[in-house]
Length: 320
Ligand code: ADP
Ligand code: F6P
Image 1 (tube, rainbow, N blue to C red):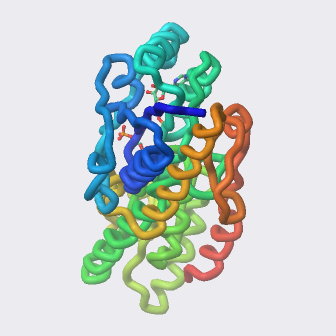
Image 2: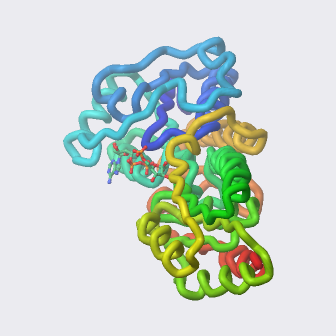
């Protein structure tokens, strides 16, 4: 049974990470464990940047975006020597396990450290919802709501000026944010890396409805497509409508987490501690059929996540 555990956040931050850290810290303390907050991802482990945590350490953070433990990328941890150094630091600190809150990259580090004898549990924290073993990742709902609010504002000015707005949303190589937000804002088209797209066909549909009086349009593009400028220029040329691009960027990563993010982060953090309590490591916590579960890290990393084909179809059949 684990007596002392560490918790860290790694990779890109996501709203709700604080709620997960809080749940890990408080539930571990309730079980009589000691808790160490490791700062700036794996860097903190390698450089001795950590704090002993008590219940008060996580007071007043559940409603905050970002992560109270800070986050970073740590190239050194990609090599065996870095992971072995991490293991030695855990032994020095007397850590019986670590909860790693982050994305796939962070889970690879967690698997490597588990293989060195330090049980690690991954908790999915990323706005992209691109982790295959789970239906939901912490931060996704907040990011989508932020994007939706921003695009609603863009829509006001797009409409006033009889323009077309191309809005790029985040998602790394995935289009989950784009398709959901696209539906929520009533976009005429959504372009994602997962689905083929035809700018001539989109422009053709726009021209058809322009004849019946429609004067403004919204197209949501996932950043992973990597062609926002080209799409903007092409739609402008094909339709003749003044077309402007907006890249929402890091605004989507911040802000107070929604209810969904706070609750799921709390459930996942709690579950991670239950596993470490039993001495279980090398697992990722996820959501399957709406329930919290856990899965072997290697298995989790080899899974493929289906795209939202049904949502994509619905969008295309309701957009015009
Ligand atoms: P995310 O966790 O959001 O996918 P990254 O891919 O940037 O973000 O990974 C975060 C950190 O996890 C990296 O900086 C590194 O410390 C660690 N990491 C990533 N890939 C590996 C790997 N193959 N082996 C060990 N550690 C890794
Ligand atoms: O993974 C979260 C994310 O915000 C992606 O959507 C985006 O591609 C990436 O991180 C941006 O990373 P950075 O903050 O390092 O520019």
